[in-house]
Amino acid sequence: MRTLKRLVVPILLAAGILACMPARAAESPFEGQLLRLAEILGSLHFLRNLCGEEGQDWRLRMEALLEAENPDEDRRQRLVASFNNGYRGFEATYVSCTPSALEAIRRYMREGEALTRDTASRFGN
Image 1 (tube, one colour):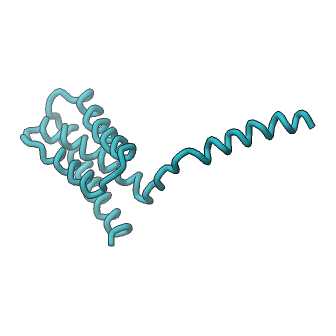
Image 2 (cartoon, helix red, strand yellow):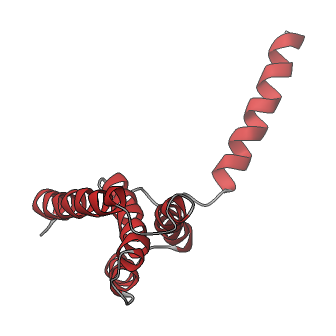
Image 3 (cartoon, rainbow, N blue to C red):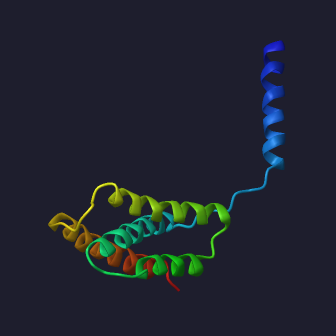
């Protein structure tokens, strides 16, 4: 009986604490695709500028994605972190435009297009 009390009290305490916590917003069914797309946009932002494209086009596309999604602060931070991870990953690898950087651009362009198309066709209105 004492063993049961030792288990029940912490379980009831934990349940009470969890019941008082605000519920986290349900993650969208395409969250993984959006996080990957954000990472691709960050990668392209770095690589395209490295290889001669001047401008903020890819960062602006990320801003448009954030505006369209209108995420809560936690989700916004995850999306921005994905963008930054994509950027920093290539920033740490490339100091000049190389054939492999150009190939990475081609691959990310194809993957980004496919992600956008697939996500829109599966989840769009």
